[in-house]
Image (cartoon, rainbow, N blue to C red):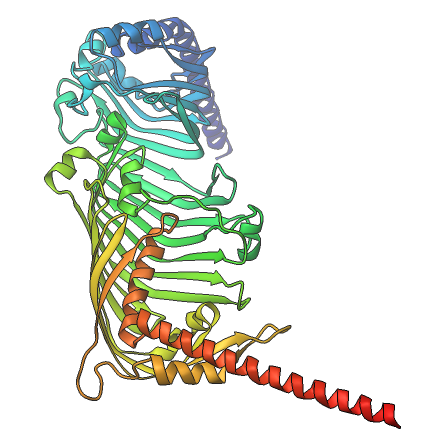
Amino acid sequence: MIEKIRKQKKILIRIGLGVLALVLIMALTSKYFAYKFKPLVKAQIKELVLQSTDSLYHIEFSGIRMNLLTANASLTGVKVIPDLRIFKKLIALKKAPNNVYHLELEKLEIRNFHLYTFLRHRKLHITQLRLDRPDVVMVNQQFDFNEDKLSRPNASPFDYISGYLKELAIHTIDLNNISFKYINNNGVKPREDSVKNLNITLKDYLIDPHSSADKTRLYLLKDVVIKLNNYTYATPDSLYHIRLDQLDFSAASGKLNIQSLGVVPRYNEMEFAKSLGYSKDRYAIQMSDLSLEGINLPLYILKQELLAKEMTVANGSVRVFNNKALPKLITEKIGRYPHQLLQRVQGKLTIEKLNVSNVDISYSEYDEDSQQKGTITFENTSGSFSNVTNMPKYKAKNPWMTADLKTYLMGRGRLDVGFKFNLEAKDAAFSYSGLLGSMDGRSLNRITRPLGMIAIKSGDVKRMEFKIEANDRVANGVMKFEYNNLSVNLLKREEGENRLVRQGWMSFLANAIILNPNNPSKEGMLVTAKIHEERAKNGSFFHFIWKSLLQGIKHSVGITEAKEQKIKTQIARFEQIKHDREARQARREKRKLQRERAKRHKN
C-alpha cells in the first residue's frame, strides 16, 4: 500500500514537472516569437495606417509588447498624426475629408487577438481595443465636394489588407476618459469647444469583402455608443454654469438621452443683476429628462448638421427673474424673436418635432415702487413644436414653425395657446391665439398686487379668447374676455414700511367709474376689445406679447383711454379740492394765531 502511494506521488510529480516544463517552453517560445514578430508587426501597423488613409495619417508609438500565450498586446506612446501636405493635395483632388483628427494616448491595449484563427485562416479577430485617457482634436472644414458623400468609404478598405488578411474584426473599441477638442474652421476665425470625461464605445468593426457595402454599418461599425457624466461648463460671461448628468447616445438607435440638464446662475436673484450694475433677466433652468430620437450621426460628423426626428423635454422648470429696481440697459431688441434667434444659431439644426411635457414656467419681477416680488406662473406646461429648423432646404418646403401648448395659469385656469412663426419673413411675422378657461380672478393677485398695486377683491373669469397677428413692429388682433363680479382695491406702499395699504377713495373711483363689473353686461352686451400694440424697440418677445394681451384685458374691463382720462380729471379735481381745503384750513389757523398774538399784546 505504501509502495503504491509512493508510485502515485512520483507520477504526479512527473506530470507536474512536465506541465511546468511545457508552460515554460510555451512562455519562452511566446517571448521568442513575439520578439521576432515585433519588427514585422510594427511595420505592418504603420503600413496599414498609411494605406488605409491614402497616406493622410501616420502612426507613431514608442513601444510594443506582445504575449502570444495570452494573445494580448499593447502599444505605448501612441500618436496618430495627419500630414497637412497630403491633406492639401487631397483638397486639390477633391478627395479630402471634412474632418481631420489628432490623437495622442499613453497606451493602447489589444486584448485577445485569437492567434490560432490568425495563423490558420489569416483572419485577425480582436476581442477588445482599449484606449485610456486619449487626447483627441477634431478640426472641421466643410467642402462642397463632400455634400452628398455617404457614410461608407468610397473604396473598400479590404483592398488595403487583402494581401495579408482575409478579415479584420474588432468586437469592441473602448475609448475611456477622452479629452476632446472640436475646432470649427469654417468662419473668419476658428472657434473651439472642448469636453472631458467622455466615453465612447465602437461596436463590431469589420473589414471583409462585403462590409464596406453593408448599409446597416456606419463607417464599418454596427454601433457607436457615447456616454458623458457629470459635465459642467461655465458660460463665456461667467454668469451661469451648464450642468449635465448622464448623457447616453447610440448611433444604431439614433437616440440620445440626458438624465438631467441645468442652467445654474452664479448669483442669487437679488445679487445677479447687481453684479452687472443694471437690470437683466436671470434664468434658472432645470430639466430632469431630455431625449432626441432619429439623430443622423453620419450627417453630423460630415457636415456638423444636427438632424433629429423628435425631441422631448420633460419634468422640469424654467424660472425667470428681473430686478426692476435697478437701472435699465437700453438696447434695441428688434431681431431677437425666438424664430429669428433660431436662424442666427451658428450650427445647422433641424428638429422635426419638439415635445414639452410637465414643465413649470414662471416670470418674476422685483418692483421698485412696492419693493416686493410679483410672479406669474404657467404650470404643468405640455405640448409640441414642429419644424424647428434653420436649414434653407427645409424652410423652402415649409416656412412655418408651429407650437401648440397647454398650460395652467397660476396653476388654476387652463390656457391653450398656439403660435405660428414665419421662418423666412423679413419682418419676423408670427401669430398667436389662445383660450383661457374659468378661474378665480383672485389667483392673479400674486402678480397684480406687487407689480400693478391692484388687489382683485372678486372676479370670476369665465372665458378669455384672443387672436393676434404680429411682426417685429406691431401687433393687431381681437380679444373676447368674459367675466363676472369684478371688483378691485387700488394700493399704495405705506411710507417707511414694506407693506401695501388700500387707497379707499381711489378704489371707489376705479370701481364706480372705470371698471365694467361684468362682461357681458347684465343687458347681455359683450365688449370685444380690439388690440393695436406697437412694440418698444428695447422690449423682449414675451414683454411684447404680455403688453398686447394686457391692452386687450384693460379694454375689456373698461380701462379705455377715454375712461383713464376721465379718472385722471376726477383725481385732479379731488386733489384740487383737497389742496383748497388744506389751504383754507391753513389760512384759518394763521388768522387764529394772529388773533391770539394780538390778544396777548393788548394784555
